[in-house]
Image (cartoon, rainbow, N blue to C red; front, side):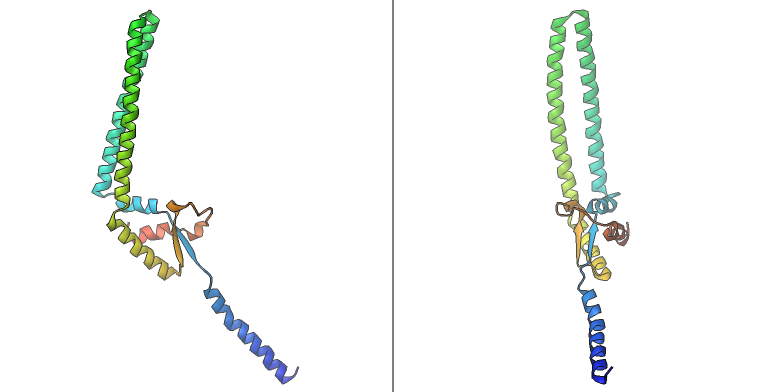
Length: 175
């Protein structure tokens, strides 16, 4: 092989190997975070979340009590029907309908109230400031170009668990 040909081969070989690291740096690295899980860990012992959980329990207890009352009314109506007392069964049926309507309205109103409380908790500035700072730190140190939230997964159809950094975020937040 001639000297010029060796130099040309060496030059192209050198050029190829020197471009490989540049190509490697062009690869985009994504991460995903289950923000609901981070949120849960962050607020697990906070007073606002305890208040939310207390209200949720109270509302459920009231719904359970109302359901038990409905069950008793339905049994009373059945007893009236079996005894041949159709007027009492009719009055009880009317009472059951009113109770069902009340229970539906109560449940809807309390669900709206709980959703509003939860939304207020999730949009807390303190939480999002900490989350953003932590995500920024992890992204920069881990070489991530983008970190996506699994809760806004309308565009995420599939992801590998290897890009899920949720536990790293929770650990970094000290939770």
